[in-house]
Image 1 (cartoon, rainbow, N blue to C red):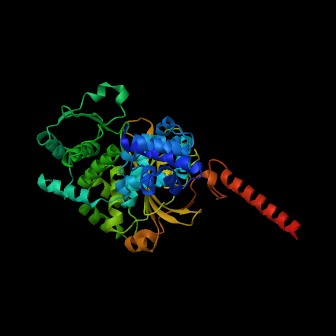
Image 2 (image 1 turned 135 degrees about the vertical axis):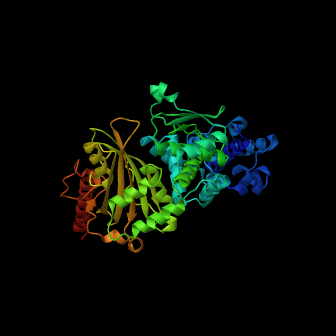
Image 3 (image 1 turned 60 degrees about the vertical axis):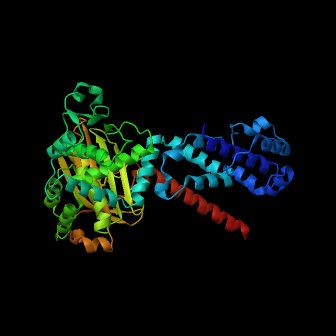
Amino acid sequence: MEEEYIRLIFGLKLKQVRTEKNLSLFGLSKLTGLSKSYLNEIEKGKKYPKTDKILLLSEALDIPYDQLVSIKLDKNLAPLGEILQSKILKEIPLNLFGIQENDLIDIIAEAPAKVNAFISTIIKIAQNYNLSRESFFLASLRSYQEAHNNYFKDIEELAVKFAEAYQINLEKTLSSSELEEILKEEYGYTINETELDKYKELDNLRCVFIPKNKILLLDGLVDEAQRTFIYAKEIAYNYLNIKERLYTFPWIQFKSFDEVLNNFYASYFAGALVIPRKTLTRELKSFFNHAEFDNSAFLKMIEGFNASPESFYQRLTNILPVDFNLKNLFFLRFTHKSKSNRFHLKKELHITHQQSPQANELNEHYCRRWVSIKTLQEIEKTNQQHVFDVQISDYVTNGNKYLVLSSATQDPFKKGYYRSISIGFLISANLKQKVNFIDNEHIETKRVGVTCETCPITDCKERMVPPVQIEKQLRYQKTAELVERLILKYSS
C-alpha cells in the first residue's frame, strides 16, 4: 500500500479524533509537546509520525494505539478511503485541467466531512445512473476537449510534419494503400483480412492489433474510408510514440484514463491526416459564401475526403471554432434499431458552453422534431445509404435557435441498425457574418423541445408521451401559490 495513502488516512483519523474532543491544534500541541506546524503537516498527510510520537498522541487523545494506526476508517470517512485507495486520482491526469493532486489532498484534509459528503453524493448519483468507470473516463475526456475548444495545435502540426516526411500530398485525397505501405515498410506491420471473419462473436469489431508480432487483424467488411481511418490511427500510435493504447476498434474497455486520452490523440491525428485543416478550411469558406444552402454542395464536400460522414462532422468541431470563430456548437451521435421507437444519444460534445440538447439519462423520449431523429426515421423508411437534412431548431425552453446539419447512415456491421451524426451552430450575429445562407427561407424552422416529458409545446403532433414533468412543475407551482395566499390571508 502506498505510503502517501497511509499518511493521508492517519492524518484524517487524527483530525477527526481531535475535533471530536473539541481540541484545537494549539491545544493538542500543548498536550503532546509536539509543535503545531508538525501536527498540521501530519493532518494534511504530508508527514507520518514515528512510534514514540504516535504513543504521545494516543495518550493525549485517549485512543488505543492500534485504533489510531489502523487504516480502517469509520463509516463517516469510508468513501474517502475508497476513492483514495482506488488510485482514481492518479489515473486521471489532473494536470491537464491545471489541478495538482496535492491541491486535492489539501482540500480533503481541510474539510474531510464535507468532502466525504460530496464524494458520497457523487457515488450515489453514479450508482443511480449506472455510471461505469468507462463513462466517468469518457466524461472527463469530453470536458478536456471542451476546455480546449476541441482543437489541439500540436497534433495538427505533427500530422502535417508526418505528411511532409513521408511525401504524402495533403492536397489530394488520401488513400488506404498509401498508408498501408507505410505501416508495412516503416513500422513492420502484417495485415490479416481473413482471421476476424472466423469469429461471429467479434463481428462488432473493425480491427484487433496484436502488439507482439505487429499483426493487424482487419474485418473484411470495412470500406475504403474506414480502412483509411484505421491505418491512419495505427500510424498515429507509432509516430506519436504512444505506448499505453487500446488494441481493438471500437474499444471494448479502458483500463486507465491514459488509454482513453491516447485513443483520442490517435483519432485526432488520423482525422487531421485524412481531412487536412488547410483543405477543409478552404472548402468551408467557399460553401459558406453560397447565397442559399446547397445540399448537393455539402454532400460533395464530404465525398471529397476519403472519410465517413461521422469523421467529417467530428473534424468540423476541430476546425470551425479556431478558423471561423464558431465556438457555440454541439455534436451529437444517435443510434436507432429498426422497428424500435427508441433513439439513443451515444456521443455528444458541446463547445464553449452547454448548448441544447443534453443527453438525458432518465429514459425520457427525445424530441421527434429534431433533424437528428428525422434523418434516422427517413433512412429506416427508404433504406438509402446516406440521408442528409438541415433545419433551424428553435428551442422553446431557452429561446436559442440553432442551424443543425444531420447525416444518417446504415450501420455496416449491424443489420437493422442506423446512426445519425449532427452538428448544430448557435444562430448569432457572428454566425450570420460567417454564413451567407443562414437567413435562407428554404431552410425549414422547427419549434423543438428536449424531451417530450419536459416540452411545453401544446400542439405537437409528433409528441410520444404527455409532458409529465411540466405538469408536475405546474402542480407544485399552484400548490406554492395557494400556500402563499393562505399565509397572507391569515397573517393580516
